[in-house]
Image (tube, rainbow, N blue to C red):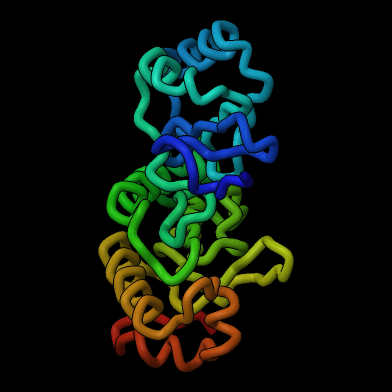
Amino acid sequence: MTKSPQDGPPGAILQKDNETYAIVPRTPVGLVTADHLEKIAAAIRKYDIPICKITSGQRFALVGLKEEQLDEVWQDLGMEQAKVKSTELCMHFVQACPGTDVCRYGKTDSLGLGLELEEKFTGMKLPSKFKVGVSGCTYSCAQSYVRDIGLVGTKSGWIFAIGGNSGGRPRIADRIAKGLDKDAALDLLNKFMEYYVTNAKTRERVSHFVDRIGIDAIKEAILTEDTAPVA
């Protein structure tokens, strides 16, 4: 009997062979410690895990585990499970670059904002899967313009973009506001999330939603007179 990808223990993703699983330890915005890395390496050796892959969501996927190994592996790792599976309709991850913490080009605190968004929104139930890119400068190393929501740092504040997608129907996000401080960026994201939840169809990614509704209608619904628009 063929199983569903959602079958199996919590935090485990059934693989193509219908027998083995992948697990994804949680590493918010890609931040890891030496302790994390040592425990992951030790688990790979101990359980002979055939594949360890860094995902586009800046997480480690450990692939090829037997079901009876899962509990012991999690215990050895001592890490929290990723909050969602790859097929769930919710916020999946926030991708962020180093920003002003270490990068000479960083203009804004992308790690700080990314961590705040990760804690607040990851796992939130939505019409479709949802990804955010937070880049500390206009080089956009967090791929902000091909994420459902993109935030890009400048000297004058955050640029806010909507509707990017890097999938089978690639789309560059529409920039709708600029010069936002952190609170204003969070407020605008909250407003968009509410509008998206209310008006999107089930499994309608934000890029498709923007094409159907129209970016002008979205701007009219969520921008205020105090928001500086992007020309």
